[in-house]
Length: 434
Image 1 (cartoon, rainbow, N blue to C red):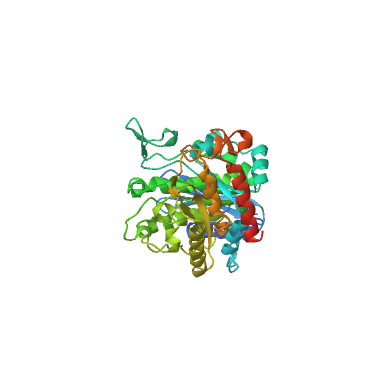
Image 2: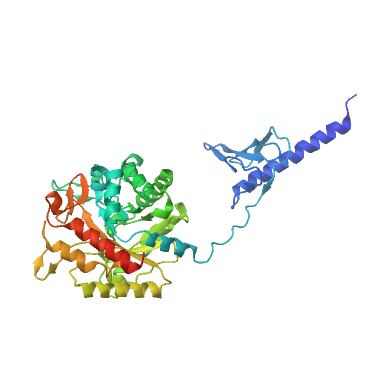
């Protein structure tokens, strides 16, 4: 004779289990998503879209270590449960403790202390010509060059070519973002530099203007920033040696307030990257007018708003003529801005020969470049000067298209850029007491 009490208990258990699964499914649809207590499943709260008919919501059973499924259709009806044994153990996520006070700033300060002199590898020099191997690392270590800066050669609106066409590096057409394979051309050098415990400063777009962020292009840019951040995570780089910025340079801007021209875009891009690259990743920012230091020292560029994120390094660029005393005044202004803004870290992203020194115009292979470097160091030591050196332009200081080492008379090159860099790094280290 059937046990009616057993049948009743089984029906009650099935009803309770179905109710539990439905509750779990509804919890999965509501923010924040539920989290399994213990043991953690490989993919808690997994949701699989089923075309337009419905979706399968999977609940994890902590006591059995198994999953069960319930189908939730577009009209709200549900089928299931499938193979339930016991009700799932589901709780809301625990409260995450607030970051320790000053942790973001401490990350940026630690980054700043890791180098006294850095250099730029321009565009395809980084992605194709140069190879950061053991020999290059030994050479730079011997000179006390502690980091490399580069940027992705992508300008969304394109660049007009000599044949009249408009396209980008890698022959990208307007509005087409770099693919993963194209981005990963930078990966070997990125991995090697960070593995050698050298700083890597990288911007994800080239110099850009408002024409690069039209309503048609902006969604492409934002999707690319998210993708690029994911590709960087994929490389598993040590974030202690890495700083990622959205844009190499914000070109120009309205004279009345150049920084206001780009502020909303700049902070939005920063927010996108921070969402993909949480601390301890460091992010980079720079002001308008091609990142010129005037934004820190007071000018018609207008106020530079650094935002709220202290795990950020703020950069400046300059190709100015100046005396040693003039550069010292620039650094004093930058230091004052930092002090007035909570001690935020400011570093040099590009500095190179420009203008006239003592009536001399800086042209290719001009010995005045050595004097230019001497006048900047050690007075700019606190900015960690980043020399615009390895380039395809008229200001190249490297020995050749495939050689990132500096000119030196010992190798038949004039002037002695190698000696000037060695002396600059040594003077900066002494000035900073490192």
